Image (cartoon, rainbow, N blue to C red; front, side, top):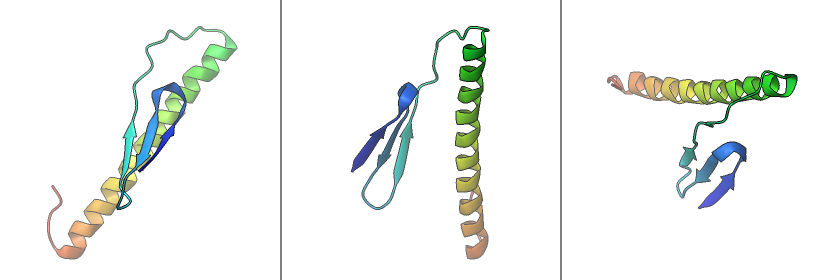
Length: 74
């Protein structure tokens, strides 16, 4: 079981059998309106969009598995 600690409270864990567990906490910091704050806000948005993309892909794979078996995945 390997753990990777990332910045801003993100943690990715790989368990036996190839399962991945992602843990994260949404930051509760106020971001200033200066250019640095703007970059941080955009970076936070990009992380969330990346997570959305990963989840969308996982959902698509599960849906395709269900279609191959002729069943529903809901």
